[in-house]
Image (cartoon, rainbow, N blue to C red; front, side, top):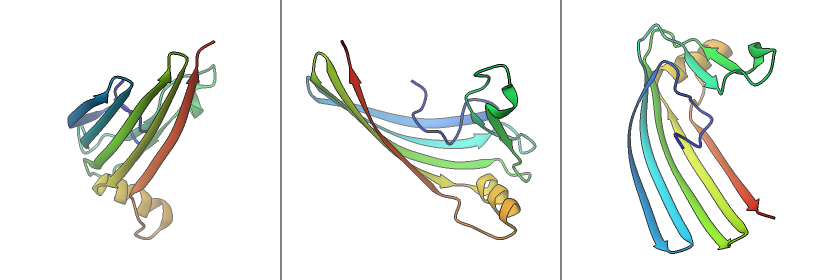
Length: 130
């Protein structure tokens, strides 16, 4: 899987990253990553969303103006996957996005003032096989 975060997708961006995957127990996997995200060009837009999900594709992704900046920011995240038993898996994800110049430019333009451009995202997922 490319990324568990919702802060970016693969359109018009560059992603330099490092990943560390540990398996301290047979049923436990810990994955941590650090991404340095930038736009392919300063004139590009910052796309968020997964693309067409139904006939009305206009609301399936968003294109944010970059303000002639190419630094989206950095993403640090951790994922913990625990196979409780063969039929139950628990996954926890937490990511922190450190907004760069493009994020700051977009949110400042949208609000007319400088605002915090960082973001946190977390979730817990249970998978039950039956």
